[in-house]
Image 1 (cartoon, rainbow, N blue to C red):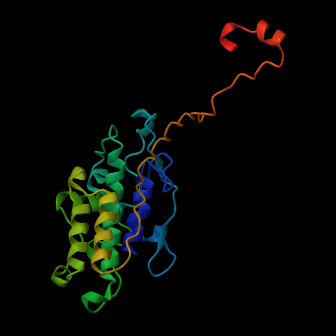
Image 2: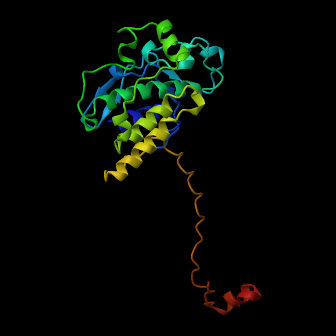
Image 3: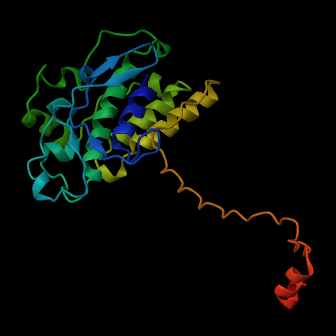
Length: 245
């Protein structure tokens, strides 16, 4: 299911649709567990695109001027809480989504029974903040104290969970440019599936379709050599050019 979340976000961030046709990348900007619909035990779907932003290269910095501090405070990336989003770099909006995804992955890990007893659900940062924290309280916790949700030792020592924990840690890095991309997270989960013997799910980051090959000119097949019909009369023969006689 974690891989399904990553594939959904990679699809949004991609320049290409699964069929290979170009598309405009999209930043979700409010990714959280309550904006994810579970379809089956291994598949889910992202929803609530009310704050989503089309990352169109034709737009200017002025068009993105009011696109910085939006979303749910608990899931906001450090640079969003600090109002220091680089609006000149469209990748910055994708990096914000990846941070939010890391908190969702942490929530999934906390509900996984392979690590032992599953405790009562707690959102990211648990009781360190109130149920509906404001931006100021999250700024103190995430920026000033560099706080992140706790990763217990038994998560890290589990053979499969340790890779998930490493992925989560790399996705919530304080430096936006140091975070993994959604596509990298998909590739990492695909590797885990291969090690577990599960079939790999194709990545949603498609390469552009190859240009069609130029048509090969048709060459007519050589036919039998033309033959000049024999003259039927002597007058016919005399009326034709010498080369034909």
